[in-house]
Amino acid sequence: MPLEYLENTLHPYSSFCVMPIFALANAGVPLELSSLSDTVAIAVAVALIVGKPVGIVAFSWIAVRLGIAKLPSDLNWSIVFAGSFLAGIGFTMALFIDSLAFGDEGLNTAKMGILAGSTISGILGMGLLLRVLNADFREA
Image 1 (cartoon, rainbow, N blue to C red):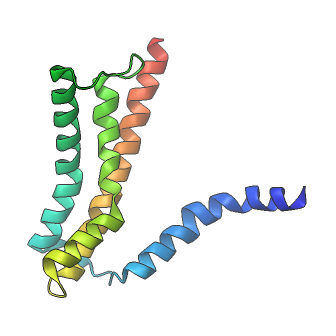
Image 2: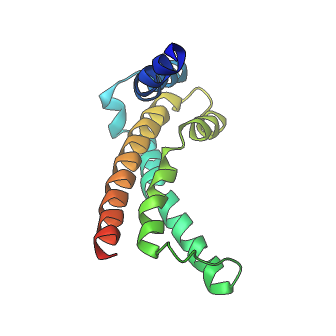
């Protein structure tokens, strides 16, 4: 089927190149590296990189300890910890919250913090998951 072949061939380019560029262009982020040293950008990035994983792991652990939830048998805490970093990729909701918090003042620096924090969170999450899952795969 020619249409399915074309769809399967273009999918990686569309998903990993066109869509991120489209999202970045629609976010209206002026790419100024000097904005990264602003305290707002640093705080937003740290919240995405550190705050989200800490919250996810802490509340997951509390839920398991209280008996509200149960950790699946094929999942361990190192996988939960590694996967929790992927929550920091939340670009859209972070933009919405920052626009409510900062209005027009400070929003561009917050956007740079979101962009940096999301990028670092994605790289950390993927790297840690690959490391943890490969270690688990080798042990099995």
